Length: 168
Image 1: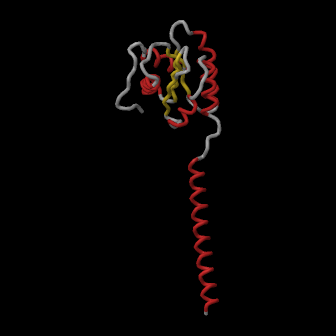
Image 2: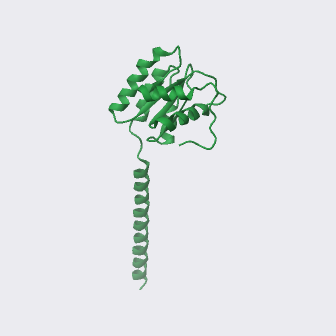
Image 3: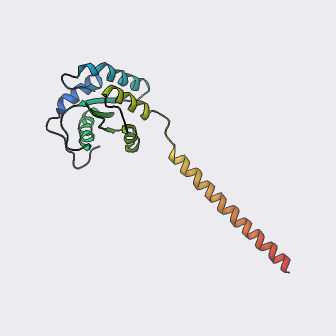
C-alpha cells in the first residue's frame, strides 16, 4: 500500500530493483555485489521462518529519509512481501510490508548498522522477536478495571447496608 504522494528519486532504477527482488529477494547496485551473499542469507533465513523479506540496497541521493520507504513501496507494489530499502553507506532505511505493522517496521529500523548486511540481519531479528501483545494487555487491563469497579461498588453497598442496620 502506498500513500497518495510518493517521492522516488530519479536515480532509483525501480525496474532493476523489482527484477532483482523477483529473482532472489535482493537488489544491489553495480559495484556492491559483495553484499549479495549476506543479504541472500537473511532472505533465506526469513523464508525458512515463513516470512518473505526482500532487500534493496540504494546508494543514490535522497532528499529525505522517507524516500527510502517510497522506493520500498514502489518495489513492493510489484513484488509483494516485505521490502526493506537500505542506504549504503548510511544507516537510513525504509520499509513497507503486507505482513508487519508500520510500528514494528519502524522499531526494526531504529539504530541499525551502516553496513547493509549487518543492518539486514538486525532488522530480521527485530522483526521476528516476540512483540508485546497489546490487544491482550488492553483486554487484561479493562478486565482488571471492571472487576475493581464491581468490587468497589459491592463494598460501598455492603458498608451502606451495615450503617443502615446499625442506625435502626
